[in-house]
Length: 219
Image (cartoon, rainbow, N blue to C red):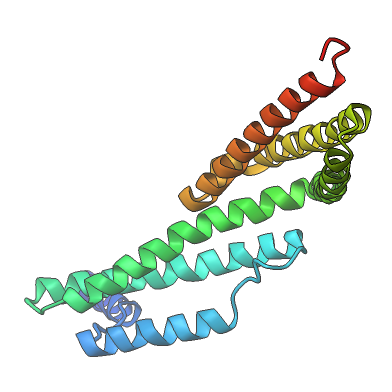
């Protein structure tokens, strides 16, 4: 008999502990309000992706990602319980969609920050090279315009060679930049990169044609 009561007592304790561990089911309004509060607080204290301190951004984004996943899990569990009770959870489904997109975007953003932290020295060099080649190209365009006015073939040849060298440098910088995080680019960023590449291809082709006309002894 004592054994029976002992088993019952253990069962009661376990049930009580489970009841304590299970969070209360929030109403639709309460759950939505909690979601909005989370977003508001999150925006105030989230990783700074505009910073060049990539190692810190990588760590901060990892911390933020955990917060997002915990909040999303809690929201989904509460939504499922409310749905099982027959509640209209359309508002919470929208909230879950927002959380899902936020999580997916953060996963990509964190990967990019961490990869840039790993390649910080290389990125700094790519940026410096890009700035140098842009300056060289702008200078070469002015020189080319001035040379074209003189109609001196040798001057045009030298200026076009200077321009082509700068353009080839920019093309190399673009390819090196893509080699770091090409798989993490958004569709918009990819489209911009493709547009830059097409522009470079055309400028290189046009400048090469100009060189062929002005630098060749037979021209």
